[in-house]
Structure formats: C-alpha cells, structure tokens
Amino acid sequence: MSDYSGSRFDSARRGAGALLSGALSMLIIMVALLGVMWILEGIDVVLNGSLDQYGIVGWDPDGLVGILLAPFLHGGFGHLMANSLPLLILGFLAGLRDVGKFLWASLMIILIGGLGTWVTTGPGMVTIGASGLVFGYFGFILARGLFDRSLLDFAIAIGVGVAYWGILAGLLPNQPGISWQGHLFGLIGGVVAAWVLRRKREITASPY
Image (tube, rainbow, N blue to C red):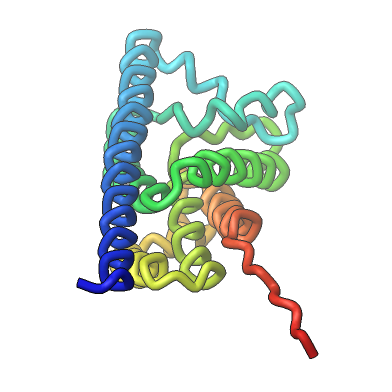
C-alpha cells in the first residue's frame, strides 16, 4: 500500500471516528434536553400550569425573560409529545458534525426567534413551546447545506427537506392556538445561524 493510500485511509478513519463521537454526544445532549422538558412539564402539571406564565409575553418588558425559558415549557403533555420527536431528530442532525456550532446555533435561534415573537404577538399574549427550536433546526440544516457546500450537509439537507417539508404549513397564520410567529422567526434564526457559522473558505492570492 502506498503512503498516499495509507494517508487517505487514516484520514477517512479519523473522519468516521469524529462523526461517531459527534453522533454519541448529540444523542446524549438531545435526550438530556428532552428530559429537562418532560420533567418541567410534570412539575407544571402538579402546579396546575403555573409555569406557563414564564413564557414569552408579548410587548411586556418582564416577558423578555421568557425568551430563554419558553422553549422548555409546554401547554400540556400533548403539546410536548408533538414537539419531542421532530426536536430529537432535527436537533441530532443539526449538531451531528459540530457540537460547538450546534450550541451557538441553538442560542441564536432562541434569541432571534424569541425576540421576533415578542415583537409580533399581541400585548400580553403568552407563547411557550419548543416548536421555534424545531423550525430553527430545520432552517439551520437546510441553509447549512447551501452555505457550507459540504456533500454530507447537502445530503442531510435534502433528506430533512423531503421528510419535513410539511411543517412549513405551520408558518401560516391560520391555525388558532399555534404561534406562527414563533415558527417563522425560529426558522429565520436557523438560517441566520447557518450563515454566521458557515465554513469560512480560504482565499488563495494569485501569484500573477
């Protein structure tokens, strides 16, 4: 075996190892995240829904605190169950290649999605739920496939687009009790995060 072939094999092996390590890390992170949400919802049920007041309260300065809390709160176990599987799958895929970027992307999605929701919902209206994160990870994965021009990211983006294109109906303002604002600005936050965290390309100066 030539040195070139050996180096290619070693590189592929390191890449596979890094991908496996990232997959395990993301699985642990997403299971832990969902665990926190389920525990909080259990506490909320015991407290007769009193935790829901800590969501995003439109146009209320005190409600800005809810930007960080709202993704972890839900209006019942049915609401949480509806978000759990897509959050697990899309979050896992969003962080599969780079856990550090996933954490930064999550923060940007929460802040952009939350601020957009706070500004565009009616005064005093409370918004809770992880669906903004779901839409954010969806947008992040699709946009990352375009911005990074990575074959793996592009393949993941195509798979996610085919599997979850139907969730885009949640962007329409015609479903009572559903925050289309949270969905829309979560999606925008995901696209912005993909752009900010895109892989920087080196520019090689021409000798001529």
